[in-house]
Amino acid sequence: MISNLTVETRQAALATLGLCAFVGLLMAVAGAGEAFGAHGAIVLLASLGLFLAVLRQLDEPEPPVSRLRSYYDDPIKVGIILAMVWAAVGMFFGLWVAYLLAWPDLTFDTPWASFGRLRPAHTTAVIFGFGGSALIATSFHVMQRTSRARLAGEFSPWFVLIGYQLFVILAVTGYLMGINQSKEYAEAEWYADIWLVIVWVTYFVLYIRTLARRNEPHIYVANWYYMAFILIVAVLHIFNNIAVPVSWGGSQSYILWSGVQDAMMQWWYGHNAVAFFLTAGFLGMLYYYLPKRAERPIYSYRLSILSFWGIVFFYVWAGSHHLHYTALPHWVQTLGMTFSVMLLVPSWATAANALLTLNGAWHKVRDDATLRFMMVAAIFYGLTTFEGSFLAIRGVNALSHYTDWTVGHVHAGALGWNAILIFGAVYAAVPVIWRRERMWSNRLIEWHFWLAVMGTVVYVFAMWNSGILQGLMWRTYTDAGTLQYSFIDSLLAMNPYYIARAVGGTMFFVGTLLGILNIWMTIRQAPEAHLAVDHPTSPDGETGERSVPAE
Amino acid sequence: MGIDHESLVAFAKTFGLIYLVVMFLISVAYAFWPSKKGEFDRAARSVLDDEEGPCR
Image 1 (spheres, each protein chain N blue to C red):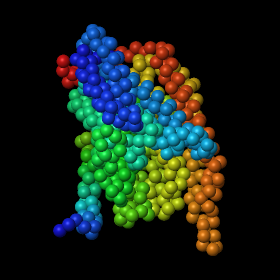
Image 2 (cartoon, rainbow over the protein chains, first blue to last red):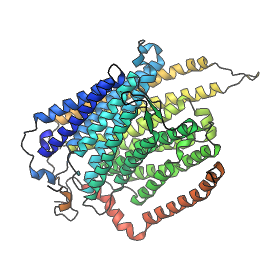
Image 3 (cartoon, rainbow over the protein chains, first blue to last red):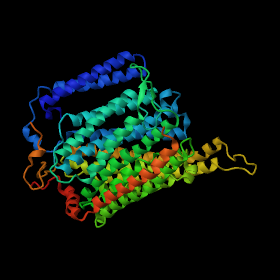
């Protein structure tokens, strides 16, 4: 893969990696003996390792110019593999946390294995490691195909993909060592946050430059969703993380916002991380891979545009529903609640659009587990957005908030919608990207499908039961006007559901491992396909000049 | 004059309403403009053959 880069790009990579290694060295020296220094060592070693890998191939011959007439798929390959590695790592942490809640002794009396450290490691590894790597990899795929143009540049796709991995590694390892700025889904400290801004801006510029070279008159709707994802996540990330470090040689910082403003900013960020990271980006994935796999155009392209504007304009107002019954002004809570209910319209329009696309292709859904993954994802998208609107209503929230109902809701979305859609997209993309006729084993995909669906259902039903029971126990009064149940009573009542949740999670995890095995064997063993042509071209048939980067 | 709570609420209730309705109307007009039909139909089909492509 390195030898497919031009010598100039290899030199640019060496310069960048050298600079990163130097920064890592400074961090390691400044923070010696502390967690910050360990992060410096991680940056230093990761940069040096990649530096040596590039250096060893520096003198390889230049790649042929003809490569510029084909799509650039190397970063997509690495991205898909990294996404699946993160899936295994993140779900392993998730399982651990699930078993820990059922059997609290599993911390082994070590600080790094306590719930408060493992939990953010789980959420970050699955959302940002697994979900984020899958979003980056599929966006590289979708932006090239729908634009019929090669990625703009050979260095920046790698910078985005690898740089993003460094961010997630710093985040996850930091949480285990106790570095945490105490903002949910944004626990990483200031230096990792700054690094992510650099990576993310590069990502946005790369996307715009690739679209600018497109050979299609219209920008396909999947790209709109990916663009909204990248742009809004950048804005959210910057505003939520404005912080002043205590020193340049330590990990601690103080956030600019304080009190209720900080809470508002946190949940404006937190809910829109769901809205734009886990919804808009994934809708981009859905709008490309579902029609492609079903071999039918999207049911209503016009509806997809209308829902796009509905989703992006409603979602940004919904965050305050996380702060019902708090010091936040009442009208701001009501505003968030109202927009959350309104969101049901574009969300269900989108889910219906996806399912109606399958009308006339239901025999394919029956026979093809890959397409079935995408269909189930669309159904869970519809279910979860309905549940979300419902939970945002103040009265419902009074029962559900701080209970496992929220956890069940999040996992209906994260497992049923996000993870299952990624699996469908990956099974659709892997044979195309690696030029294989098909996946290695269809039976394994079937096994994975049923394990994933059953695991999600077991998980979600366990948490619904646990959450509603917990909420009801907390609000049950005796005739004397005192609480009927102590907190420990509710904990004991939840225990069987916690065990059920761990079982559901285990099923989902086993399915993921089967998927990794299948992808690995596809890359190694599945028969090669001979696609006739794989060039970026203009729609008229002749090779478009704009698709070829300048020499 | 400082920005107080009441004026923020008034702003949200007036301008907020107007700009969301206007956004909605613009989106509907763009999505359902009759002459756009051909472009959108073509775009919807364009993803189906991007791999072996129209280049043959």
